[in-house]
Length: 67
Image 1 (cartoon, rainbow, N blue to C red):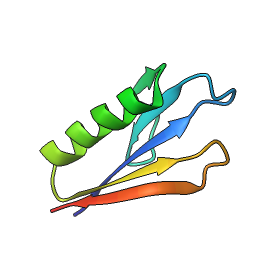
Image 2 (cartoon, one colour):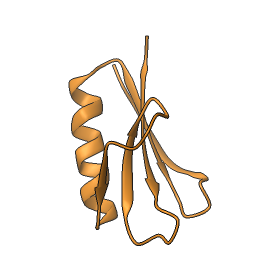
Image 3 (cartoon, rainbow, N blue to C red):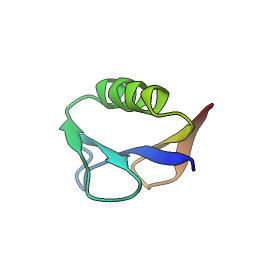
């Protein structure tokens, strides 16, 4: 079963959440790059997985699959 990870901005786009399986966010980061880095780490350590990075409108900006 593929685990789903995502990086999404908070309401004001002042921070970025790392979410696992669409449940409550696990962590909030000030920098988008930091959030993506942490989410990538988690996804790589829990293969098979998929990571999606959303923009401020919650559209998928980037997606990676880890097998």
